[in-house]
Image 1: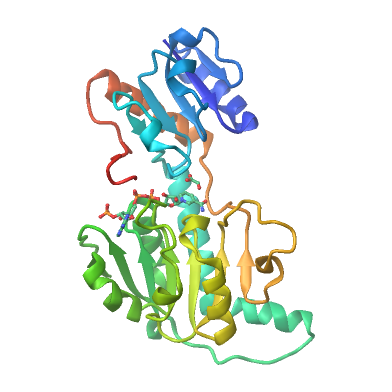
Image 2: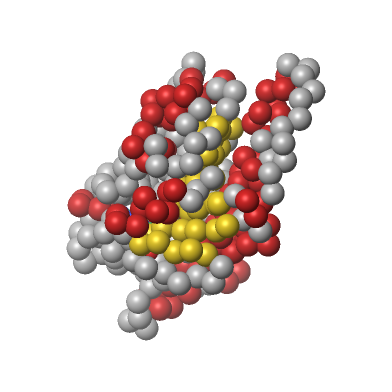
Length: 308
Ligand code: NAP
Ligand code: GLV
């Protein structure tokens, strides 16, 4: 019974050292090494091999090494093999940090000041109080809730939106399509932390931007597929949106010459808002293997019907 890792090989080497120390009885291989493929019961992958069951005929559990699972073709996964996404404190903490940085950058007009600095222009923009501004998070899952908790001490009006209703102290929680307009109307800064599914592809589009307060800021840390790129460019041109922080794009990397690279009101980072941390990810995976062995529900089990 063995575990194969199929993702960044440098981090795979870290997983190997950690697993050798914590679970020496569990044979571990870093792809393309698989050992005896018939002995592989567990696969931790960013992208699985094309012919998953042909490659690992006795696979019991497929783990995503990331929090998102949109890179998996759920319809091609056999129903008896559960898909489990990564829920571990390293990803959560780094996302809370990055989203806070982005919200504060937009709140304090950093994109405008970066342009002014390049132009050697000394011009003050009136400082607005945090209390006068609303920050809203699309998606109140593991990451969305952690971001809101990290933002709480700054004093923004906080709100959130999800499919099912949540109750989070200090956060105005909205649920479902009917409550989306009221949520958006209060978001001077909007953070997208939805999973990418058939329902959420293209969610950040002109019709949604039109419901935000004029001059709102956008942070997309979900997936590039959430954003309709032309609609963002038009909203920035018209002033409907003031600036955007984008950590994700479609495709990744963006092609040379893409308008996002040099846009004066877009801050772009290469999908680094958060990353799975080997130390805590290995702990999370081993805890799930123990749950699996006991016949318990694993943390992060993906509901295929919902797509996340
Ligand atoms: P999660 O725990 O599954 O939470 C997803 C949230 O989105 C839930 O609150 C869910 O509502 C809500 N949601 C999903 N579909 C919806 C819909 N159609 N309408 C309304 N709400 C909907 O996921 P997570 O761990 O927070 O991760 C979220 C995403 O962050 C990942 O899928 C990934 O794409 C992205 N991510 C990005 C990075 C990066 O570095 N940029 C790193 C990690 C993750 P319910 O609570 O009602 O189910
Ligand atoms: C990274 O984007 C992840 O889904 O963990």
